[in-house]
Image 1 (cartoon, rainbow, N blue to C red):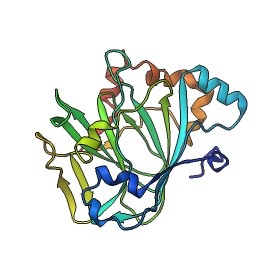
Image 2: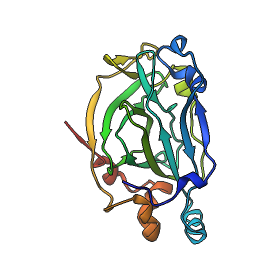
Image 3: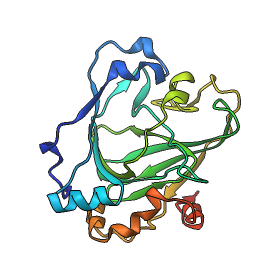
Image 4: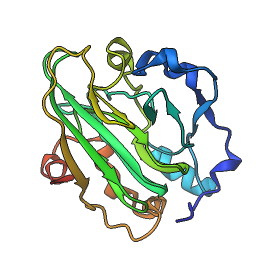
Length: 236
C-alpha cells in the first residue's frame, strides 16, 4: 500500500534507541544508539487540506519503525496515554501502510501501576485500529521489515508519557520468546487478544478522510461515541 502523502518531504522527529532506555525490558543490552523510529507530524497533501485539518483541530502523522531487537525485546514506540477531552480521554486512529503492527493497549485502574485491562491487537497492512479512550498504547514491530503507519489524532493536547517511564514500559513486553509480564506493576490482568474492527468506511489510505473530515469528529470530542468505541475491537 502506498501512502497518499509523500511524507518524506516533511522533517521527522527521530526517537533514538537510547531514548527508549527507560521503557526497555533489558536496557543494559542496548549497545548502539540507532534511530528507533521516525515521526513525520502534521503531514498533508495540499495547503487547502492542511487548513481543513487544522480547522477541525486534527493532525495527520506518519511513523516509520525499522525492524530491530534490543536484548530479546522487539522494537517498539515509547508508549503514552492521552489526557481527558471531557468525560473521556482523547482516542486515536492508526492505519498500517506497510508491514504489520502489534498494539499493546492498556487501561489503568485508580493508580498508574494497577491495570484494569490489557489487549494485544494485531493490525495488518491496510487495516485501521481505533485506540479507544482511556487506553494507553505501545506499537511494536515484530517483523523483519519496516513498519509504516499513519494516524489521525486531535492536535490540541500533549501526550502523557510519565506512567510508562515510571514503570519501565507497558505491563507486558513482547519478546522473541513470547510475552513477559512487567513486574514493576502492582496489578496486571491476563492479556487478551483482539483484531481491529474496520468501523470507518475507508477503502484505501485513510488520509482521504480529509474530504469528509466530519466523520473524525470523535477524535476531538469523544463524549457521545461510546457505542462506537465498544465496537472498535473484536476478541478471539
